Image 1 (spheres, rainbow, N blue to C red):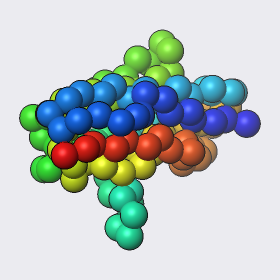
Image 2 (tube, rainbow, N blue to C red; image 1 turned 30 degrees about the vertical axis):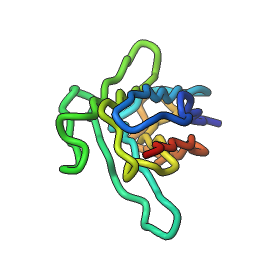
Image 3 (cartoon, rainbow, N blue to C red; image 1 turned 60 degrees about the vertical axis):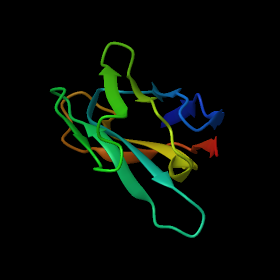
Image 4 (tube, rainbow, N blue to C red; image 1 turned 120 degrees about the horizontal axis):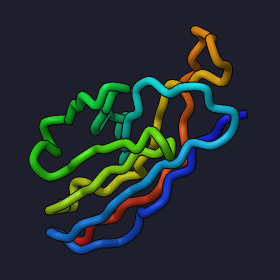
Length: 122
């Protein structure tokens, strides 16, 4: 069994910063892409940032220049540094990763964390 656990969410004023961390645990052979999604009430879940196994990154246009995604392969973690936060960034942020549990296996499961609340006040 593999799981992802997010931490670092909270309440912050507009213009402030937060750093989210997602830690993968369990029987992990390898991890391909790691991603951060967010979902505000009444909205669809949307991709915020992604990083592949080689370190290449992608960001939604709404967060470019403000958010930074990074991973630590040795620790099986991915972080999202959020700067210059805006009220429209308020959402539950979810960690997502493609994980293989067995060495030599080509089967990767897409695992989701439970989410962490980020609230940005105006």
